[in-house]
Length: 250
Image (cartoon, rainbow, N blue to C red):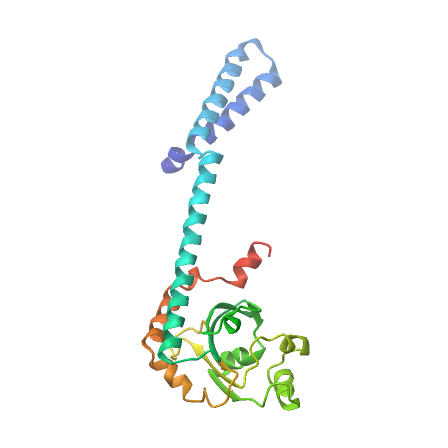
């Protein structure tokens, strides 16, 4: 009770002041003039106390802007480090202008692409940034742990069949793909029975005989991959998420 009074005395005075003033107005007795004054005084003192104890709108706005700026700066640093590590993985694995590596975060029933790296500016461009969790090699690897596929030549009936039936891409989607993959390697991360899965990494090539089932082991062997998965695990709260966007009305 003592602690409550210490932090909320101004609210008690507001209530008391309002009650005393109302009582004086109700009975309108001459001797209640003093009671009215006491009520007014209590109300004023309580209001002053409330104003002093509660931060102003400008103070709250300044604090919110500072926190927002700090959060944006943190996300910028995280994005820069992800890009740097993906570039180092590409260099270590000697990926060419015919390949690319993309990393995705799973959240709220979908995948968000965190970043992508390729020596080809055209292949590095981001197309869709949100992917349904049941589409593509991303969705298969998420459910099975890893995935490898060697596809027929782009544009053939067999390739179209794989895109639409195996990977569940609508014809309008795979027709607009900048990367027409022949080889796809995907792996869920982080690995380990005690690790909580975060997302999927995907390697793609539009040439034959450049990627294979052993490419997953080659990826695991790169020092930057271990660093990247450890970083994403420890900084997952700073990553862009679908649930965060939806909670803000997007």
